[in-house]
Length: 349
Image (cartoon, rainbow, N blue to C red):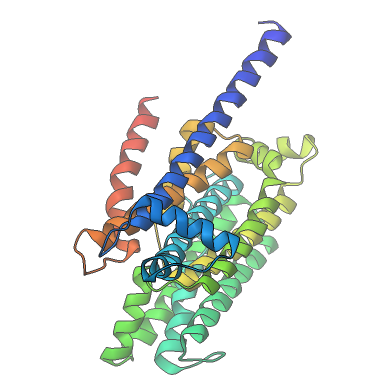
């Protein structure tokens, strides 16, 4: 094959990835509008679009239906989209820097650390504004960052290799899980119920302030991750020695991307609780579309994760209405069959 044909083939592949990504983006936007229109009392898609346009233009809302959409449904929907996007992108990055497709954002123990921080606040009132809702969020976030710092400090001392990150993360995961369980063991029934409800993972009662914080940290971290996409593509497929000969510093990329992944994950689950599995399943699905080309893989994985969480949340709040099932539970029921099917297809391929 001549060089011109190789270039043409490469351009065609990139063009195909772009249009697939564009299609998923349009599908995600449609899903946001449709899912927002669904609830205890359904609203028309026209009303949802009108409410969004009025809010963006600063116009007064006409009626209570529009106020419910803007202040109750939209924050929940957007937080679910941000959560799915951020966790999936973080999962894809962690899989890349460790060259291990079984890794998720929670492999380094962030979820257990978050649960421990939240438990301390809920049960004992320990922490900044301990016992309050904002105190629980702050505590969860701080302990997630502490856990990530411990993992990468220890891993750095022994070479910051993929295996050192995974093994240290697993150790920290068990440590914080044990401490969280110990706190729960001493809690009374009311406090224990609050802790357990937090660990289910939910976007119930989402507020715009929570959306702004999570969205801002996720957006900034994502764009910084995209700047490392070429390096991630190389690191995820080649060993460190080969990557170094190509002018890439694997340790530097791992530190940068690990910190960004930890910030994104912590900023999301400190508000939502633990929404598991999406950070593992969405990158696997995205990899079949974009391979390991991280400039396309990351945004596609993020959008697929957003779709999964959005659909799971909509099912959870409408299937047994008025009872709302936390999205963390529903996502596993939806994600596991998809993930297993994807694994089977990959093995056949």
